[in-house]
Image (cartoon, rainbow, N blue to C red; front, side, top):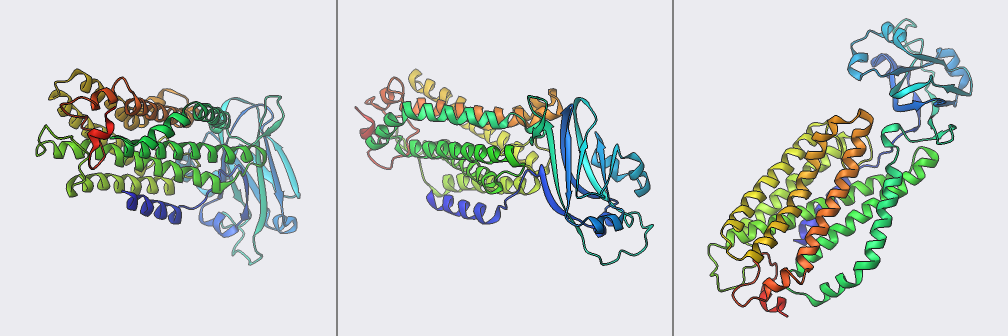
Length: 437
């Protein structure tokens, strides 16, 4: 169980590059790239309201003047629409043209009655081929700062509209984690020290919750710095996604092992013995197979996405496959739990399995359901709806599972019955006796 975690951690850590949100962009204006792409793409930013500001700083003004460098700004134009335009047509379609002749240029954007996406392209005299061969004069360094108006109407907000509010959300989430930790950490530690039939399940669940809290903390630190400089701490953003990925695979391994292990073993174990988590090659292979597929898709998704969010609105192939996998896992667990519940005569045990089913389905289905329902919101709200909704739903799912595993009125009463203890037990020996009071 722990070997796959170490392997996953190493793969994710070594293969996961740091990326920035990029609302303060530093780089080079390249004539060769501008000619190849009919304009070098610089960045995207969603403005709203009045006094939106773009600040451009050049590191080599004479070279920019010699190249007749310009920055073209387009609003509410899809990338496919720009690609279908010829090079001269792109110059005409630009909403704003900034001639790069000064060391620093402040450009106020037109008033935005509704949030609108702006994209910046770099062009010069060589872009459309009219200036002949590109001389080897080097490239022009730049720093681009994009600012929305803050609550006072001053252009100081580095957040694009679709990102605004996430910083406050993670601040409140950390406060909730802190309060809950102060209230429940001591009873949880006592339960872990006592052991019992659900000891390993509580360990995995606590690990997943700690990873979720760590991810929230890293996101908060990244966005707190980002709100001041528009760059943030890219390593923290990557670490937040990494921690969330490990939490996802840990929960998947636990849920699959609990359900599959018992289902595969119940046909050959006598009912007079405690039903335990079976670690047979078949059940282990099923659990590890699901973990490897999920981990691979999560890595693929993070490489194809450009923004720092643990959950995306799934515009990529990897994101779509992740949604399909989560739905498939929910269907498999539903089938397994239906067989268990339909053959169970004890009302108390059925209540336990129904509660367990709620936690499983909420964990797996919240992301696909929120992605589908987010289409009713405006485009700039969808990412926030999915991110905030999934984080909250999965936290609620963890709380539901904690209540089941720790509840004295449900689990511990069932495990103390003389006939048989709960099937969802992960201890290897004496599981029933350790759960009895």
